[in-house]
Each structure stands twice: as C-alpha cells, then as structure tokens.
Image 1 (cartoon, rainbow, N blue to C red):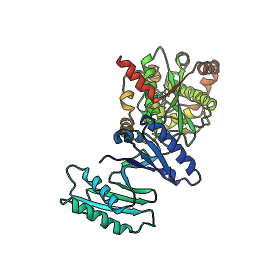
Image 2 (tube, helix red, strand yellow):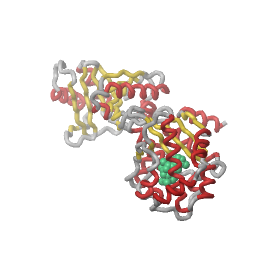
Image 3 (tube, protein in one colour):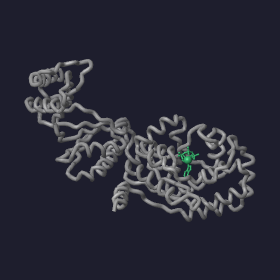
Image 4 (cartoon, rainbow, N blue to C red):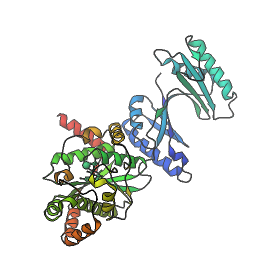
Amino acid sequence: MRPQYILVRFGEVTLKGRNRTRFEQQLVKDMKRKLEAFPKSAIEHTFGRALIALNGEAYEGVSAALKRVFGIYSFSPVLRTDQQLENIREAALAVMKQYDPEPRTFKVTARRADKSYPHDSQKMNHLVGGYVLKNMPGLKVDVREPEVQLWVEIRPEGVFVYSQIEKGLKGFPAGSNGKGMLMLSGGIDSPVAGWLAMKRGLRVEAVHFHSYPYTSERAKQKVIDLARTLADYVDEVTLHLVPFTDIQVRLKQESNDNLLITLMRRIMFRITEKLAHANDAKAIVTGENLGQVASQTLSSLYAIEQVTTLPILRPLIMMEKEEIIRISEQIGTYETSILPYEDCCTVFLPKSPSTNPNMKVIRQLERSMDWLDDYIDQAIEAVETKVIRPQEQKLGEWERLF
Ligand code: ATP
Ligand code: MG
C-alpha cells in the first residue's frame, strides 16, 4: 500500500480553550515550513487535526519531517475513500495486504464521526472485517490482542482507513509560549535543556560564552552545530556568542580560587539577563542538574541566581544523567556534544571549587571589583549574533565534500 494521505492529530493544543485557534494555526504553519522540502504535498486543516495530501511525495520523508515538529500528537499513513461500502472494503483490504508476512490476527475499529452514515460502528466492523476475512483466509479476528488494528474513520469529508499510528513529539508549537535565553555550552546537558524548553513552546535564543584563544575556533563551531541541530526543530535559532576571555583572565588574577566558578557564573547570568532584556526574552534556560558538579549544589545554585530576577528554567534539574543522555541521542545532539573541545569553564576550572559559597564573601569580592561593570558592557558590545538555520547545515556538509 502506498499511502495517499497522512492524518495528523494535534497534541496538547486541543486542551487549550481560548488559545486553541492560535496554537493550531502556528502548528499548521510549522508543518507547512517543514513540508517545503516536499513541494507536491499539501495540507488541509480541520479543527484538531490536519490531512496532508502526499501527491506522490514519499511517505518516509514526510514522516521523518513530521517527527521534528512540536505539537503533533500522532499521525497515520491513510488511504482515503468516499463513503461507498465497496471502496471502504477495498481500502481495508489494501491496508491489510501491505504486511509481509501476513498477520495472523486483526481487529476492525470503525468510528462514525458522520452520524448521517447509514451503518453504525458495530455494523461497519462486521461489514469491513467480514470482507477482509473472506479475502485473506489465513487471518482471524482477535478483539483482545490483535496483531494489527485496522481503523476506519467515517467523516463527512471522506473515509480514512489505516493501521499504523506513529508518535509525534507532542508539546506545544514553536514559540507559542514566549521567549527565553538558553545558556548553551558545548556539553551534553544544555542542548537537551534547550530542546525541552522549545518543546514547551518556548522560543529560545542561545547565549554562548567562549574564551578564545584559550578555547579554539572548533569549540565555537561545535556550539554552532548544536544550535543548528536545535534549529531543525523550529526553523531557526539565534545564537549570541559572548567573548568571555578578558573577564575570566581578570577574575583569575583577582579572585579567591575556590569562588572563581561562582563568580564566573554570576557574571554569565548578569550578561545573559542583559541580553534577555535587549531581546525581549522573559526567562533564562540552563542545563543545570542538582548536585551534578560543585556549581550545581543547592547552595551554589542559590548563590549564583541571586544576580537575576528573571525566572530561571532548569528542565534537567531533577533528571538522571542516563535520561539526559538518552534524550540527547534521540534529538541528535549527543554526537556533537561528546566531541572533545574544551569549554570556557573547564579551561579556567579551579582545583577545588566551593560547594557552599559564602554570600557575604561573594558580595565583598564583587564590591572590590570596580572594573566589572565596564568589562560586562564591553563583552556585550562585542557579542557576535548569528541566525542559525537548519538548511545551512546541509549546505555546510555539501561544501565540505567538495
Ligand atoms: P553542559 O553539559 O550543558 O555543559 P554541565 O553539566 O557541563 O552542563 P556546567 O558546565 O556547570 O554543567 O554548566 C551548567 C550550565 O551553565 C550549562 O548547562 C549551561 O546552561 C551553562 N553554561 C555552562 N558553560 C557555558 C558557556 N560556555 N556558555 C553558555 N552557557 C554555559
Ligand atoms: Mg559544561
């Protein structure tokens, strides 16, 4: 069977009373953008779902694209017929015949969304099921644990017959819940945190601190590649590259070694907050995880976040590392994250960072750093901003080949 259509079911958007229309429109827009790569396909949108006419485009390609759209609950390759019983029966048989080897058991589940249709669901189960059984002698009905479940949806606009339901990413459509700044390192955690935030409909602009020349161009490229992988789920990600070297070098000269990380991270949050205000973002997203390293003990998190009044969103805060790695593999950032390029923090990492930083000492130290505000302003002025789009990745790969 070559499916002619894909039936797409929307996710949580269906729960949002008043915002529903807006969410659905955004979702359809996101799907259309993804389907630009399949120019023959076309979307028809009805309330709570969409129908994609493949018009000859391969199901596999479109299906892979749909698996990168937030807000889709599930989708199915379907055959579409009119309401003539014999056409429905033929479609049902075609769906069942696609399996090789033939399944041993099946079950028909008819749904009559069009109540004017003459046969009720029970009757349709028999009319369709009976026909399939007659044409596939090896097949039996098993209503409890069928190998294949065959759905027949009777709607005013047509009848849809299918047996597969593929999971979508769920979540909310891109950018439907405001904007936040994602602190993006080259590690495993922060891209996952960013992806999870994006999945909840947060548009993210990424902020990366680099310590060139202590960190290499390749370390920077790694972050660009990570942003690109994220952009593949939402079309584009703006990335702000903040030069952090001068601040780090000066801090290293002046500060108490075991508070270095705390001070450094406080400065990162200050700069990120300023960038948030400048870009109309209302949150900071980080990949922090409770207890993972010295700067992520509760005392450290507390000491660090004092510098900002923005909500700090930490999608990974209570997750197991295993789980974080699993997500990073699924979303496609893992391979890039584990490339061995140094991060700005590891370069300046002190031997024994404090796990319980003293706020009084921190305040005193910072009061004595009369250079700090100027350095922060200079870093912000020197920020390099790039809009990262997924198709550039393809171009990049292509260019590298020649
Ligand atoms: P990650 O795997 O995301 O690097 P991590 O477990 O290595 O996290 P840290 O290095 O302590 O933890 O960083 C904690 C969080 O701080 C990161 O998840 C990220 O959000 C932010 N962060 C760290 N380094 C940078 C950087 N160079 N630029 C921007 N954000 C950073
Ligand atoms: Mg890190």
